[in-house]
Length: 103
Image (cartoon, rainbow, N blue to C red; front, top):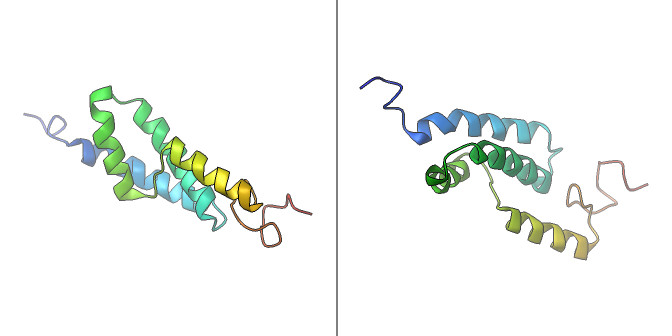
């Protein structure tokens, strides 16, 4: 058996999820909401390209490398943010939000 064939799903996805995590951190402006949205969107894109039978395991692996939230979890978080009157982009109170939309 070749080395390529013996690479596990976790081993093949880990570098991609780690890069997605770094990219999300670098572009989140210290907002946990924005970080989770960015990381989760990247994970969803990566996993959408996998065969269906590997996707459940891949989501478990993604959670080991970053703060992955399902689309339903993200939607619920954004609903809570809207109810609180916080910034829909960052989830931060408008008086403290650095996004520049709250003048």
